[in-house]
Length: 408
Image 1 (cartoon, one colour):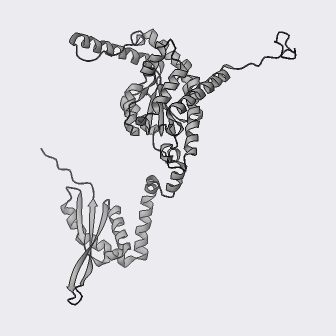
Image 2: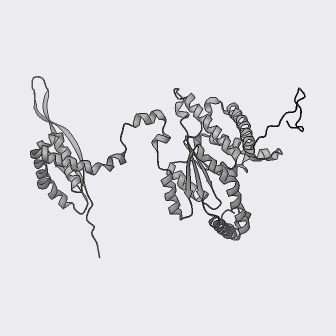
Image 3: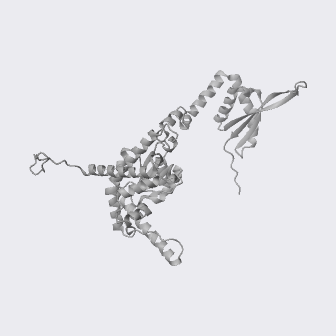
């Protein structure tokens, strides 16, 4: 028993409970989140807490190209709304009101402003959060938000409002560069901004750009990078536990980084669709699953035609050689031809399947369009009824690589 411990109500010393910094931060985050959530419900109403279907958390080292790649990510995901740059929230009207009232813009204020912003209808399908989260408190509040969105999804899943409370998809995307690359890019950016601002001041044309102190001083740029590694990096790493985490090597050219981003953001229906929607679609094969075995299946079918349906197969091949190939040869330059046929053999669906496989084996792509026309035969003068028959025309479109004509 610790003699220095303060006594409890009975007069007995109480051993103090030690609480780690992480536990305190989580406790603080819970208090912050609950206060913000209560405020959102009061302001918007429970049924109007409609958050984005997809949220991309874009983080990265200084000079890693977050600003450069944001628009590319927007195009890749089909977002039309602008990114939410969290550092700009410090200069927003909401933040300015807090500062004017003598308050400080900390985690609680940033999170509150951010959560209000993403409730805007413009972000209903998706939002990019540039520079969020940066601290452990922000990470914990984000996790609580996603849990609450999932709860809303379950709550409204069988109601008329279900479409507004879809299963959320969260991507944590971290662009990373080494220290020397970060310093070099920050300084180069500084020189570019200085030159731009000089021209604006000389000509009066254009808008001055913000020049950070770290963009002019290599030592300051290095310090900024190391602060990122020591603080923000740890917070971003913790996102691995719960969200789709994409670590992007941003060292290369813009084109190389874009390829890396696309590789990471490949669509995964099992992760992004609602479970019920995915269960409905999963019986349908994926295109790549069909393509993988397509050649082997075509070979098997062609051999079966020869072994099991020899006469019909021979007739189809003869039709292709005698009627189709002369037309295809005449269109060799264009790489496409269309052939009409009314041959009775193609009333057999197997003959049409043979035709497609024969062309595929020879390196062509064939599409068949079946057209049925009603042809009048006679009119019954007593009843006025028109007697007719079906006239079937098969129009086969054949595609292949055309000839290249070189001109001097």
